[in-house]
Amino acid sequence: MLFILVASCNKNDRPKVDKMVIATSMKDQNIEQYKLENSNGVVVELLNLGGIITSIKTPDSSGKIADIALGFDDPKKYLESHPYFGAIIGRFGNRIAGGSFSLDNKDYQLAVNNGSNHLHGGIKGFDKVFWDAKSFSAINASRVVLHYLSKHMEEGYPGNLSITVTYTLTSDDILKVRYEASTDQKTIINLTQHSYFNLSGDFASQILDHELMINADAFLAVDENQIPTGAHTAVAQTPFDFSSFKTIGKDFNAENKQLEIGNGYDHCFVINPSETAMVEAAVVQHPKSGRVMKVFTDQPGVQLYTGNFLDNTLTAKNGGTYGPQTGFCLETQHFPDAPNQPNFPTTTLNPGETFTSETWFQFSVK
Ligand code: BGC
Image (cartoon, rainbow, N blue to C red; front, side, top):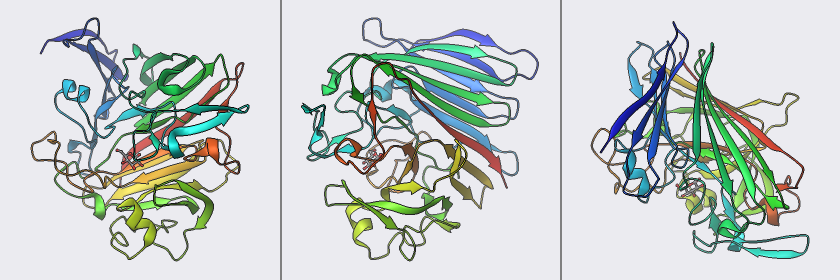
């Protein structure tokens, strides 16, 4: 493996960004690894491959730094099959029933890569492509700007879609993810970030002891194929009630049809309406380490996925393997299957419009 340190900028205490190039056996396709770092010891590493966040290091309440994002030690491992660790997901995150939808009475068939569904952009979604990356360092933030042109009919989606994702690490420990996209033909879009977190920093331990609050009075119940029925189901008096802090494990094993279908939590929550553009969608705290993560977004939904399909086949960073519930995802997004559900907020993007969206992950201790 070839590591070349290409650039490093650090003036005084300002957040800094480093870049490393890792040669692959593919022509012209080197993996570039970027490291965003601030003076509080928060470090975020990411790749031009899939925009994958490979690690997030944050201090615990005693100042001890640990990596809290699941993934691999060796960046080349991300070229192999994995469950979307840390990746940007698109063109359409989550499921589309039958992989089909229509726009202006024209039917489109996408790849079917999850039972009878299309999942997370298809066989070669945004998680598997190489993005053009540029890094910047400013007074209060360092950032990496990723760009990708998704060609007309790539994975079956109409329109040439130009997309920019900007990762920014601020001096106050917020990792901001900003998405911007435009198209030359009517298309659909639903972008998310698929980091798996374990705030303990110990990937051998389950996340069931993490306390979670989700700002949602309702979630989208799903059918046997994990496609939303369309109904907003009240969380009250169900295992899905995270309206005040509760450990993820509290009701995890409750007898409940929805938990049975998802093999655990794997559902989109309907974020409560707000007057402000950025809403605090979820807060997770890990009492033992004191780590807290807040998730803010302007999207209508957040998918809670508790790593139910992690099955000890992938080697964890610090040795061992990733087992069920050793990580959780909070994937901010539009609602699954929205192109087929007229009552869901639209995911159509028209030429001449610019899609923009932001999600922030704020790290702190308690
Ligand atoms: C989905 C899960 C899926 C997982 C793949 C999640 O976003 O909701 O159903 O298994 O991604 O890692």
